[in-house]
Length: 421
Image (cartoon, rainbow, N blue to C red; front, top):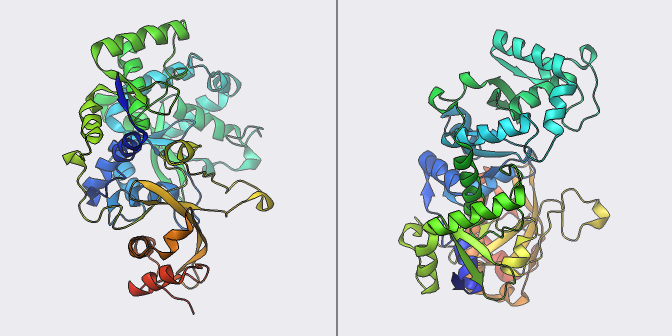
């Protein structure tokens, strides 16, 4: 068992996710490498300033352009999207996920809704299979509501929608591409390489899924193993498998000082944890340009290091994405992004993109410590972060009238992106 302090834990998790000590990828190959490193790229349709998945890659890939993940996924076929928790996954992992897909079809994955959907809409499923074979690609919009049986499911209001969703969740079809973020489906054999369309061994899949979840978290607390790989006697099977993986060195136990629960990391990450504990940065993490101390990074609303309460645990930073809260219940704003400086979350800002003037408008900026408003190093780093963010969005200017700290405003003016008129 390794014992580490909270600073080491925080830097390890940031580094595993490619956020610290700075961007270490660039270009289309770098985008694919970053997507693989973060394990799951969660997708979200909302586009306020940019979509969450694009902001997430912007924070990791030098000079990333919106939509780069789509080219890697649907253009180059290096990845595929799937799941009730919608995320992009590497294509070469498909055999493992096909085990999960089959378990969902057969009602073995702890959630019987997919199997029930197959029974309830059997006729529509047969129909959609035939139409896909005939047409090649199909989207939900191809079927008019007036011609379909209505449903009450949040997955779709037409039986055709649910039939296509069922076929996608159970692996018969995949997302061929997206149009205005809506999936366009095609039969799996026309999307995935033929050598990947098979199911891996059950035990191999279970081990993969555990390691995948640990890699995604960096440090994972395994209280109750994922429903996606449980079989037979879930609790007993989980304990046996975890014990075997610990014995084999595939995973290791890690205790973080100040945290009550025991966590797990990949055995292959033991060297990186040792380096960080000794105060060194792993050589593979060297940034291509500025560090996060020299230039702040804005985290996406769904970034795994800060979403779902993790910001509070890792950074002592209370962050809740308020986009789905009623206006009167919002504390900060609709689309607030955390600000990473060095290895700490030091503030947040809300913004919108005024498309009429092509201006990024800061609606509010809140710092965790008031003294940061007078810190020249932070001011310079924040200005560089906004300069890069404006370029990423393709905006022509930044409206910072809502920023209350004169030093921060002056720093933004110095990089030539601010527009206060």
